[in-house]
Length: 211
Image 1: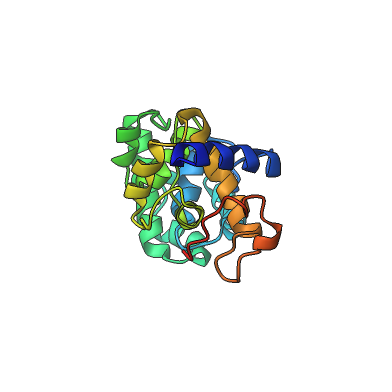
Image 2: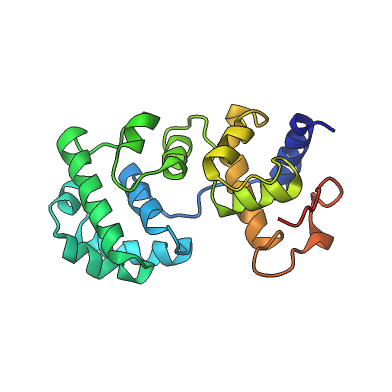
């Protein structure tokens, strides 16, 4: 089985296992996803979803958050860890959205990468979830599982994993595929316990190479 064939079979099986693939960060506007993605670094999505409720209650718009003091933002987002740096990035990012983009999130990948605190993973998430464009989000689940399954060969650097997956994952499938890897990584192919291979829908085609 080629990597392309393996990829299509993995996609098919994960679709059956997790038909409702969506982002586990709660948001109803694009800029809120941008904020949540920054807060999610080294923090669980569940915690972020709780913390942002207080943030948006106090600063309900891009303009309001852009005008907030960094200290005010930090006081609220501190439970997510790295509070100071995350607060600085959120403040700077919202200022750019307000001053340069009319409070809108740009739908251009390179423009997103220029925003403070936005890397390739975050930009891809925005492109896929908000704008419905081809995207591959190489978070820790994606990197761990694609190595373990055998879709990539012992590649740990996020950008290199992304580039390798672009070659074998149909563009229209990338975003949902990555969301399904998150679900599978949390429920079955876990990182902090021995993976539950006995109940894995991919067990017979997974290379299980110990990653």
